[in-house]
Image 1 (cartoon, rainbow, N blue to C red):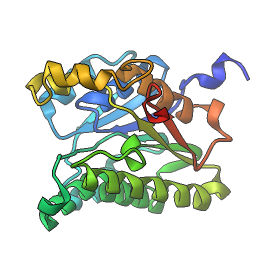
Image 2 (cartoon, helix red, strand yellow):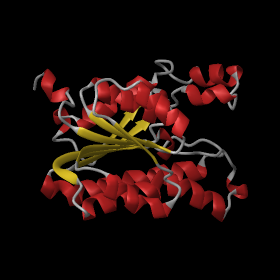
Image 3 (cartoon, one colour):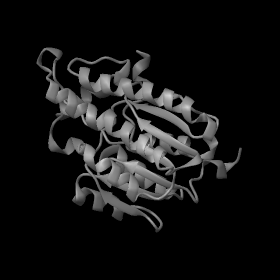
Image 4 (cartoon, rainbow, N blue to C red):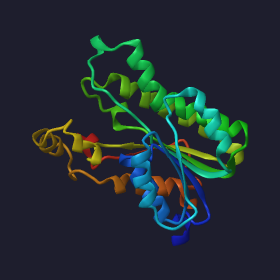
Length: 247
């Protein structure tokens, strides 16, 4: 193995949820690694901001709302053949089990799980994923590291892990890999709206043996799984969490 195995040169990579947070960081870091990236997101202004930070040329942006099921076929049809996909879109709402509703379940599962399942299904159906391609899902440590009020989100990400494993098995004949990354809590620009106070942030940080990471730490894991260095890695769940789940 050499350094070029970790490069994304000559690879066309689709990144969903690229208008903010981990998706935006993943898009930027993939472009640094040499990829030609196609970014999607539902906020045009923030998507433009990510697009303007990309390195290199030949990139594309497509405004797309994953909560609208009818648009998925349209998106898949507009895409070129892909060498890799990083599915970073996700939403969460903190709500105790006794207050959950069908509406909330459908909303969170649609973005976190169903949209990714249907997008991958369509891309495979119309042969838009190249043989030896790579698919990476952003999951969460919440699948096994329970937190009060997080039931719907945790359930959606747990289902995503299971889907990825079956997909990995089914796609092995084409050498298409499928893996998940489970990040711990990573502060992003999304915290700027004041949802989490400075005091809450400091208390949360104490739980992490290595302290908080950066969005780039997660993006580097995505790059590894998209690269040729991980061509023999499939059906795996990579936890990147600063050691918080060791406790």
